[in-house]
Length: 179
Figure (cartoon, rainbow, N blue to C red):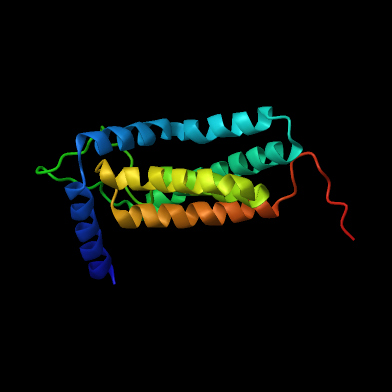
């Protein structure tokens, strides 16, 4: 199984590198940098919270909670357990500085899909904007040369799971009045 994933990673990475162009590279570097330290998602959460809508505030809160869960798992035990080295290609160097952390799973992808899952689960109207944005952030990590596709897939799965956990928690400041 590991050999199959490795071969698939190499094939998809080569395909991504063949898709490089100045315009595409510039756009994806900008997307990946915007998502550093979850700034992109926190900015969106701030906009939702400031909108005045109770539902948007709850969506923002759930999204931020999901990021906290995903980041804690991805950048803690998951990276420590797997310790996968980052991709390296002298023929196609990374478009951004290679992070010092290990590669698996992608923390950017985990945070992106965590926020999108939780925020869209609370407020489905956000999905047409947030889901493609999360996918762009995830793909940008492969395109810029700092992650393997399987790192991104694992990060996305972790993010979705974190978003689901956040959705199952009661909204901040509300006691469960259950039966």
